[in-house]
Length: 392
Image (cartoon, rainbow, N blue to C red):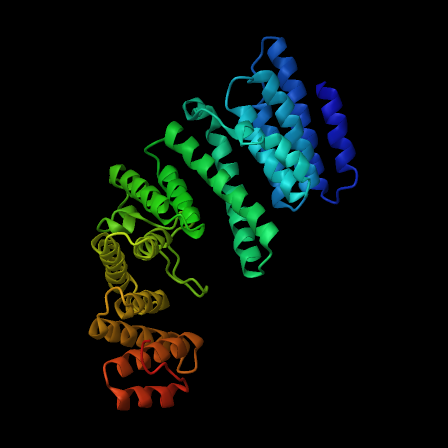
């Protein structure tokens, strides 16, 4: 049976331009064969063959070779059913296969693998142990790639592709977080995985669930022994980007604390959801003030360690938006925030920068709300923008 699967994989790879992936597939097959033979002879297997197949499949997806990934995952599935019939590995492989079939537009296969009500993908989280930790890194790679595709397809309004990528992102990010939480509950990598899953939920519009996951991630960070000062600057600095370290440089993102930033947005949008659902204004207001507190904390940290970084302008702009909203309607605070964002962007981009113009427009608009029309007109003339005269 295993030889037949390997032969099928070689046939699929015959038409692939990725010779490196072909070599990885051959290695994966050899690991299964040799590992099994070694075990039969009483020696230790060379590797975990199922993980070898899955890792090679992830590399194939990463290299845009879904047919190769399909062959490898089908081989992994046969192995999982044979070696771990009641464990988590068959369900995990079915999840990855479902996503791969969908990427190949083989929707009948995808639906068959997942089951009518998703029963094919259900697994007992208590079966997620340390042996699956190596898989978590592969799942992180899959979910990040899928997240990038999801955002791209959303921008292009490609609904079907966005839906497929959304499903893959949510499920692989959820599985990675679950594996890490059960196998290594106190690890930094676990906190980052949970924060990333929270970010995915936020992007999908599940703001309440997102906030719960953000809270879980922060709790993990706070429970980590404070042995690295780089992770302990005043509490909020613990919530670093789920997928990258702090970077200050010439890239577009500048200094980003993605996890806290997204958590603030989750509070903001959850507050708006509460108002739309006619929930209590007090609960919504608490969410808005939680968002304000996080934004202000981030501003304080960046001003202390990286004053003048352009990310500071973005944070001030978000604070201005929050203050300027009907939820808080704090015009004086909003004006001050927009002045700060304008100053930061101007020092980074010069007076003609795009972000300079957006901040100038927002500042002029709030000045008009405060009946400071002469100053608003001067800002508009200086930066060549036109603002809305008043809120409707």
